[in-house]
Length: 391
Image 1 (tube, helix red, strand yellow):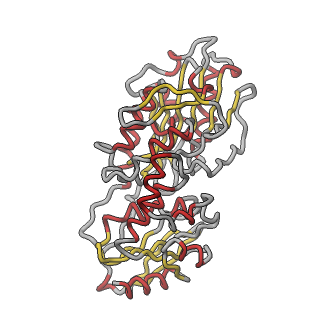
Image 2 (tube, one colour; image 1 turned 120 degrees about the horizontal axis):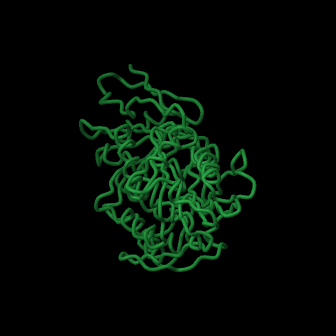
Image 3 (cartoon, helix red, strand yellow; image 1 turned 180 degrees about the vertical axis):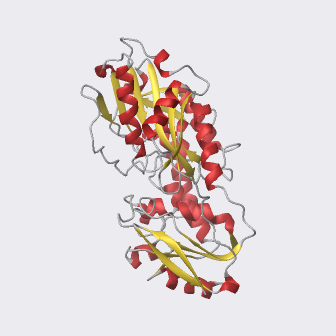
């Protein structure tokens, strides 16, 4: 027997697999995080990618807006507390800097946590709400998404975005251009998320991905000037920092993530046991389900998936469980008419469930999982045994 350990919340759990049945264990490549985030941010803004240095962009009297996708790891807050003071050092008055904190574009109803330490005195902080915050339309993308961005961002002379870069189940990667959706209206979110069920909307894929292409076009319409991106490893630690022209700086961090996260599979397995990576990635079930989409191409059509995720924060999006009782065709149609929180993910998971069973070991009530069509398991090992029975 081989003991295989998987992250689960703040700890790990194991499954015992007979050696003859173990096809492979897959995890990100080993690497070192950046040693000094402050140094890396300072270096990036002085040596940008396809743009002038930050010091040359800033002049007395200039109005700066910084759009922020707070992400999951907390690294974005640390980055922001380095960038904003640097702006004031270079001559911008603190009162002329507006930081607009959005909610993660794919978790619009999960409120971001506030930073533990405040930004410099005088800096205006706006908490963007896709429903309540006034927005103005700046155009419509070629894929039909109405681009409506909050006025605090649009009215600035210099528009900056700050975000983490990591894989995303439908956008390819989070970061750079996706920040615009964090400071946009529900109508903009609806338009972009309606593209997330396209067959080319996959994790790690950018070329030909309509979600990505729509985001790029939306960010250009909104007038995004430069981006500060931080690539993260599987533990949420920074591994690269890039500043400059939005797409080029974003792609530089994508490359860093790909070098760590991309793996070659020797074939499809009958059973896949997967973990989102422990906390904070498995705090909410809504977030943890991303792992199912990431491993879909690793499991046989007749196989089964065991998801090991603590879900200490519960489901994460109100009304998400109820979406699984709706007719998929009707829900897809509804997505194109109005914003339905979590609809695209409910449809993606339902599509997977129509092909193979998914067993979940978590702290969630069994009834909740069963309402979604998921099979509950007491432990990871119990889940593996149930998967054997299914295949």
